[in-house]
Length: 569
Image (spheres, helix red, strand yellow):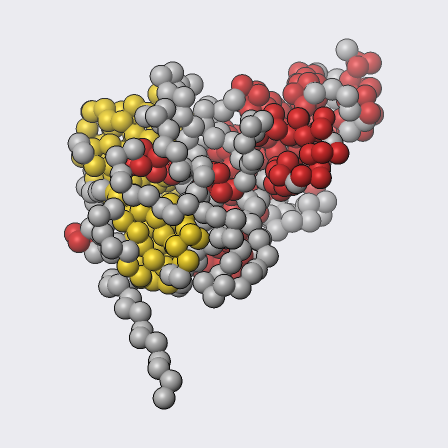
């Protein structure tokens, strides 16, 4: 065993990135890394300081090797595929084992090596926490106790503020790393998609110095604080829920000042450009609201035990409504293209490509290009298999606009939903994956069948209870919905399908539209087409919600009357 440890000590960090693992699958590489760390942890042949330094080298080296598994989760939806689930587990186990290794290296010395041990132990837990959140689960037993151990002992030895020079990021002390973890918890990551969680973590880390963590709190502002007991294994909680015992070691955390600063700098913090930047800005603002602890439940929830049927996704909901609607849009012609404006001018076809899907978009464009399909038949066949498009041209229009929904599907899948509680603004439902094939993703539209109407909601929060039970928080957008399509005022052939949502007077909500098409922007005039009504012109007045799955925009209160044309004198 001693020979193996010596080899690991000398070569493991390099071995992790070496060509010997290059031809292995991502899961196999992760498995080998996990076993290597585990072997180090169970060995008693290394001095704890040397063991800690070796684990630090491994922590810094493994990110690249685990990158393929991490990327697989960025756009994932629940339930995860077996490959996604396996990859997530390997990532979490690896960083958990690293944290356990650092915990075994703790000493009572107030030196730099011990400060690094505490710091990288917390960094391992932060990484594990992010990936636990990405699969919408709660941290494992002993997670919080171990994080409290790292911070508590570092504080006792008075090395919690010792800077770690090798870590050139904002949270470069044990204290800041711990506050970064607490801030992530208070951001309530289960209300975001995996990719957004990483953006939020990067943003929040910059503001850890503005968060407060002390043994006392301002008695005049208790609502700004949460409390945690370093001698427990429970996450931070509302001050009213703290239970005092003889062994309690309370600390109080506030992210309010950081949240204010994040909100002030949101335009700089939001990544991307155009629509992508707008989406990221909204997500960061939502995270800062949660971090501030100022969000309160506005409406009473009623406990219920009943089942209803729902339809996952905007396209499926539109297809369901089309089966009983007489509404028929004009058929597009070769001369009626979306790259024409209402003035008739031709503009480039600039399509919105979601972050992370650039490669698929390029493949799709190649599939649609005649010269490419002629000259590269073998590659074309492979691309078609990716998109299941052997007999149909693939484009964004086939999904969200005209041709994809022009033929209502008789097989639109309805999902059985177990409603646990409800309020005038939403539902908490339990989704059973054993008898449902639908996928769940934050930001998706869900239609809930209620008697003869379809309520429209937005998936706002997800929590995986067990392997087959998923708790889903639904924000209700409208108590009823109606199929519609919207077009440019002077070009009815340039249109997209939409859901028309009648306003709710009790909530002071005006009429609004839900759709997915970047050709129609907030502030523009549009023509609304509804069944059994004459088309009318109105304005897309106020952006209510924007996500990769849908756009929700409030309409102007009254129709816009077209101004009469001026006559020449």
